[in-house]
Amino acid sequence: MPNVGAAELDPDAFRRFRAQAARSGRLGDESLLGNDVDLLDRLHLTEGRLLKRAALILFHAEPERFVSGASVKIGFFDSGAEVLYHDVIEGSLFRQVASTLDLLTTKYLRARISYEGVQRVETLPVPEPALRESLINALIHRDYSVPAPVQIRVYADRVSIWNPGHLPPSWTPDTLRQRHPSAPPNPDIANAFFRAGMIEAWGQGIEKVLAACRGRGLPEPLMHFDGVGLAVEFRFADPVTDPVTGPVTSPVTDPVLRLLLSLGSEALAPSVLQQRLGLKHRPTFRDNYLRPALAAGLIEMTVPERPQSRLQKYRLTAPGRARLSASRKP
View 1 (spheres, rainbow, N blue to C red):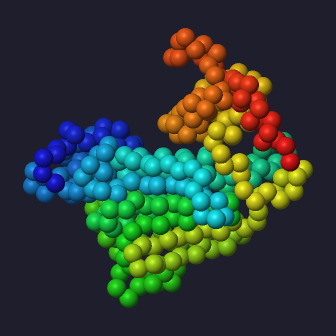
View 2 (tube, rainbow, N blue to C red):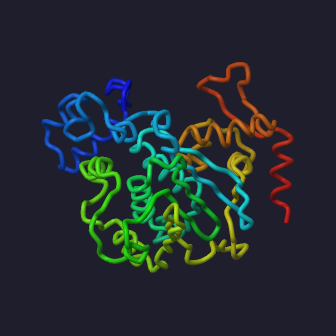
View 3 (cartoon, rainbow, N blue to C red):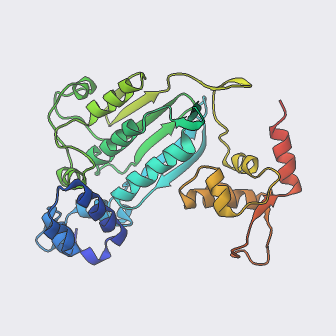
């Protein structure tokens, strides 16, 4: 990749990698303590004085400037396949993994709540290790020559992770369920993830997914190859049940309504409101929740003359209270 050097790569991506590689113990201290150019060379991400494409996918803050489709798209769909809301996750590949998992576990998947004594326990409909392994597999093994992102479709009863690409010759989705050799189409990307301790090098990714599901007594995921990409689909074992109202087939999916429900009759600081919504990703909170509610006149600032005030809080307006009241009617 000409006309781009190591100085243009994302320092945060290097920090993430070094921290994880230090924990894994799979890269010597001389590589971790050296400069970024030496680290890239140690990871076989250079060709002479030029960076390989894999280096930009792994470590650039905007890899889509060089590789179209190097991102992840998540959408929540109703039963009629209508998208209700969605997010696009960009950035270095390490950031894509962290941010996508954050969004899936805090925004898109509804956890069951149970109690062990007085301790509250939240259980996702899909084991988090299985989600993590499937997402990493999709990003590592996808075909980066295809200008389409990894796509994650979430429904009330299932979630599907699709990546563009092809299986090795003579392989089928059933081959993946059996013990098989590691055959990554992007070996330099796979090597970086291995050095960071995020994968093994023995073709065990699907085995880990299946084991995580079996360990929870859940159905094994379905795998489909549609000729242009591979999808891994997790079906939820049971509908979510509310102890008062009975079966619930889907969560409250409107981000603005979720924000109104979280506010209620209170005035809350944005940090408190974000925490109450269970959102760790601040841009998602700001772009999908706060700004649309403000633009619709459903909430207002308590200190409107100073939008950036540290004392700023948000509360419902009269139209917001009316919208909230209407949502609670049977």
